[in-house]
Image 1 (tube, rainbow, N blue to C red):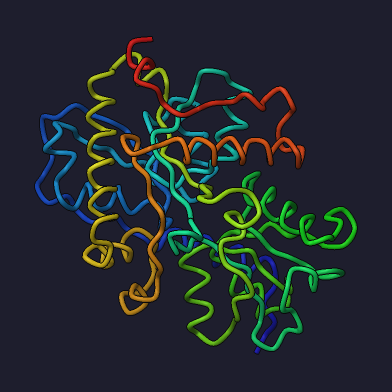
Image 2 (cartoon, rainbow, N blue to C red; image 1 turned 135 degrees about the horizontal axis):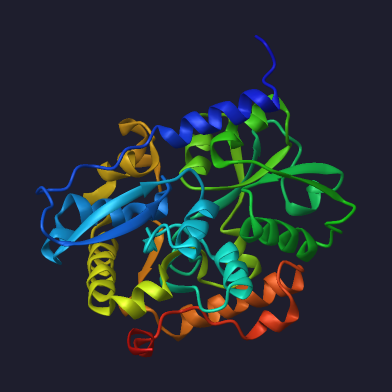
Length: 334
């Protein structure tokens, strides 16, 4: 069998991202207020699939145009640039915070997605090949570690390595890889371990390829709960069309509440949101999803802890410590 190179991995990652397709809405949209929503096929985007499948957008008087993108970073860029009014759940919190510091007043967070050890909600994990001599973070010394591209997961990876007593500058070689590459990167020897996300982690373990060393690295190393994903909304959209923005957030909040109340009912839609096979949907653990109306002080503390970690790991300047992107009621009348 021919060894798999980095070029092959990148091609297959693109195919993975393009494999997903949103379900059709329960009823044809027409006559509603038009909203452009940026979307990438990740597990955290499930509220979008539920809202569309159950007609929540239509009931809110909205006609949603979905802008399908291939990466979480693209969701942030689409909202900052104004190409999209908002993003589906699953945009990168780290990249969004960095973008907001560079373009102040451009973004707000209207929901979080992530993990919680206290609630047994799993979103990420450290995996290696089953036969690899790696059983703890300290065993990564002198080895390569893959993780998702971007500031969020680069920060988590470096921070967890540092907390384990390793020097991220010298002891570990970090490799940024799209999620669709993670399992194959292990089997090809591109990396020796991967900090990956669901559903990649559970599917790799279930296939017999990998073993899980640790789960919820961000929740363990930074804050519990830990949110790497967010729903984003453009501040200009909120300011210029506040009623439409409220209805959009309300529809996504309702979808989020339904998923939280009965996740197994909506498991089949994971296939449309992530591109995995129907037989694999039952292997995916329930993510921790928080809509805007349910955000509390613990969620705000979690976000502030992540911002502080981004500063510590030099992804943000110290002046960003006071960053607060969470949408406020007053933003609708600004």
